[in-house]
Image 1 (cartoon, rainbow, N blue to C red):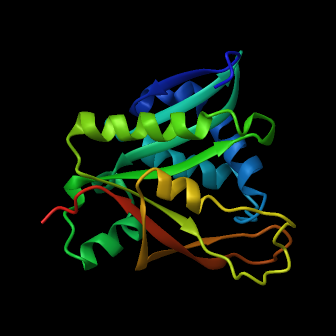
Image 2: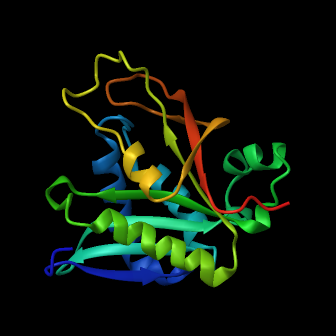
Length: 200
């Protein structure tokens, strides 16, 4: 990790002074492939409020001076909205045993310096601290032949597998967002990845 970057962790409402910066970072990073997200400050405020109002949540911020150059979030799945909970409920997995990872976003200039591992390390440590057996996240899926895919693009699957996460063949959620260049929001399918002993 670059010595110029420091990692700070916040729980619940303690992150409030940084929420606008995290929202702006999410909009900037998710605008690119594969999310192609045309974000808005209004949507970001609603989304991040779910995390800020959970006292057991985690915000991991990467800061260069006072600038937030990366952020990663997580919270107990029991505190998430229903769209993320439903696939677990359908499989009989106790929501109270799952720590859900929201996202990791990092400005391009700071990638390849170990910050992705730092984000996962901090979130997995928080799950252990809370006594939660299973960690999970989901990621958007795109058609291989999508013409918008950048030349030479590499996804994160190898990285996730090295961290011990298993791709779930039939576990998805659907979320709606407006893509760049689109007139109306569209539904998108996101696949889950899980790590840890699956609770009974």
